Length: 308
Image (cartoon, rainbow, N blue to C red; front, side, top):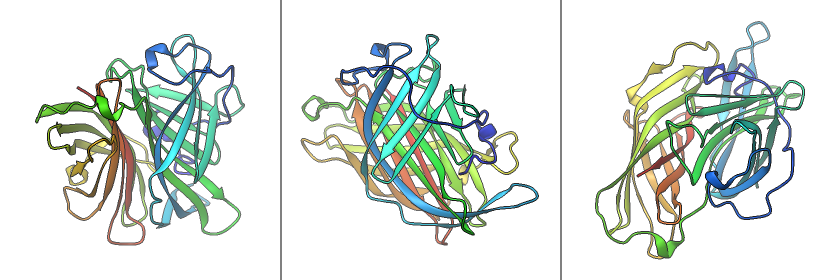
């Protein structure tokens, strides 16, 4: 839904369908092991929320009129296919609350990658996924994505669904380090932000996670948050008030950390973040965040990923 306007905010729009090609029968282990021109299915977690919106008949501008509560953390899977140049050509996402897909072989579909993010779009849905083959990211075990799609365009206001996922090869709980009190992971975060007036934006930021393995604490934060207006795409504008921070924790024998007091620097948009370590020895980290403002519309959702 949010890219009916254009994920030109990230790159360009198109529209999508399902996967294409043979399915790799083995469990996902790393991006370096994925063969070109074949589908690979990667498991993870997700959260989503229903929303309502209107579209201006003259300008095509979207205004969000309501954002519901985010679901509990759910299982998710994404099926991706890359061509011989390691460029993403199809993407489908499946969760208990959502199912959406794009495929560049279908008319009107496009997936365009730029600066570490791939944007996919069709007439009713759009998605953003971090490109695991982008050299600036250097990831091998995980990635994240966000989506927005229209569930009913026959009613007024229209209804939709927004969500986010983190997928990859999770570290076995017994392989997560138990020593080290200041291990830094760095990477990227991206997602959607809807302000109090219902105006939608794409967000991007730098991500840091300082991990205390001895006490099982993850200090999560983002910096240099920038916004691109989906109704009037242009150069991204920095907005430090939307930088995120929060303390996440995990239990012994578990590889899922969470925190329910993640908030923006403005202290007005508050919610939770959930994530995991990825790779055979916790080489990478990834997760999702979902926050709400004080009114019925303002919300911020996205994913993050990084490596040591």
